[in-house]
Image (cartoon, rainbow, N blue to C red; front, top):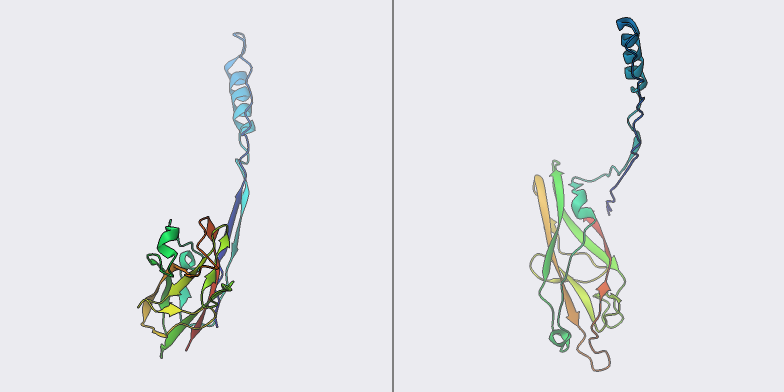
Length: 199
């Protein structure tokens, strides 16, 4: 199973440039003295304009495809959903997201499955638990056909083609539909890590 993590950090510094004030030449100074003073002033203004550092990190993996770093770490906004809409075990409108595989190559390209892992809801361990003040619901992750992918279990296999491939998914809220666990309004977040398994 291949897990991709990409991080790029940049650092820089801005410094004030040095400048020297030239004293006004007296009317009695000759042309050569004025020229020497001007040259010295120009030389003093030459220096380092700034410095910094750029750090790079990544990984080289034994896999037939590379991953677009923009889809290796992403945020899916599920929006604002009415608690009444979820109160009977209903679901919110699915929001799409994708994982982009680039430059897939090989003599025998096979298939890939995706496994999502995270904190599971106590009421339904196939769902991703909400973190925050909202409760009474959880997050379902679905494949490109809208079929739920259970947390911790591999998705249906996706057959790879040469070049770029898009793995399409969606996510939605699902209420538990229980009087003991009513849907409570509030803010929430959730995190799911994923791994790719090439076959």
